[in-house]
Length: 162
Image (cartoon, rainbow, N blue to C red):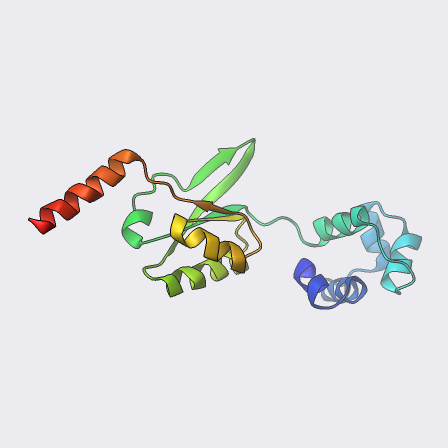
């Protein structure tokens, strides 16, 4: 909540609201973050703008990192073929969470919902990626089918054509 409120108001207001909400004093926050009480006091009364490193420490303490997940936006039948629901990259674990969508509108809604849910990134079809990148503030990757998948799709269409 704190990181979102910072952009809706200002840091001082957002920090004071979060301290009230969590029933923490400036001294408590200083003990938790290792930031001097005097520095935090000046920030909470608006006498000083905090350094980025100070903001990062405060946010990390008051808003512990949520479980990382990557959102995959695709049709339900494709989501059902995903074998794993958790992957590790560079020593960091990510959960894979599917968001079913069958139209452009549903994809946009799914991307917004995934970001609101806390997605670290979003994977979607190439035709959607450029649109989704414009509406979310997380990295967007593209599903890229390999040649076997394309050949299977062509074969399916050819059979229907007759």
